[in-house]
Image 1 (cartoon, rainbow, N blue to C red):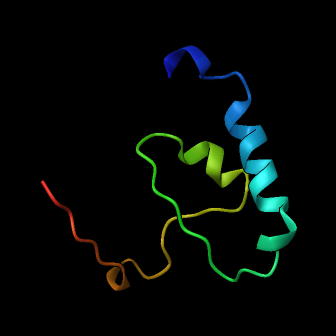
Image 2 (image 1 turned 90 degrees about the horizontal axis):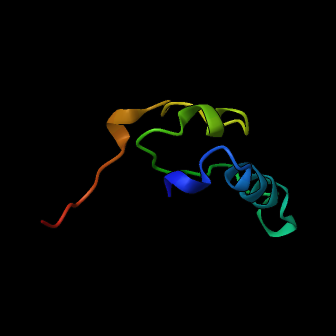
Length: 60
């Protein structure tokens, strides 16, 4: 994936997602990232407003 970094693929994908008519009415959208916080912030994503409300089940 390093070969594609900076190639605007992620930005184009996010533009398509946030402008999709079927998703326009959503009040909340979530995602997980290890290192692309800056990309997603450009599209209105931020840290969780209530992180204590989020749970996960992780299988190892």
